[in-house]
Image (cartoon, rainbow, N blue to C red; front, side):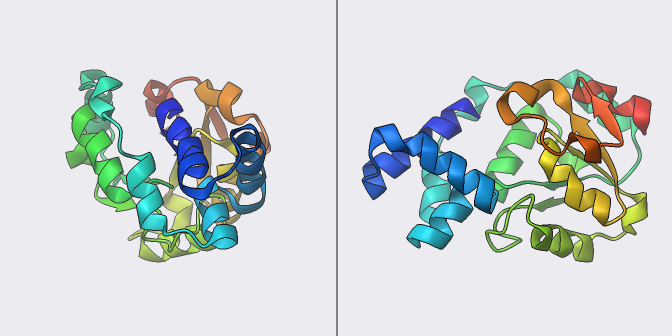
Length: 192
């Protein structure tokens, strides 16, 4: 995520001529008002979202991740249907799952393209995902590393779990919407 964040900033500097010393302020503003940098740039600068997504996700994921047999075993032991709900493009999400060795355990990927560049925590993105899910929301558990992304899921009747291990990066805003707090993804079996 650090490299992707750097690439977002670099995109703004090189493609949109945003002064380097103003990039962080603008990105924080977009994140606060629109949910993501992409959404802010799409609305306010009318950028080509596909070009942005290709640019920022052009990273060598295998440099950071490797197969995770422990996570695979956890997923095997949880018979529930599993889906990914991400602000990233689907190809990138599939690549991450493939490198981790867990792609086959997820039925669907709801990505930024699926919800028309709306993004978590925008309620419209959740509405689109819920409409496509094959189960009622009361039977769903949403796990997210950004606490504020849990509030819309909670409002729709889902159980929610905050993966707290990244709190320093994303803060605790919205943590009151978490039914559960996980220090690690490996703890999910304890709540399921």
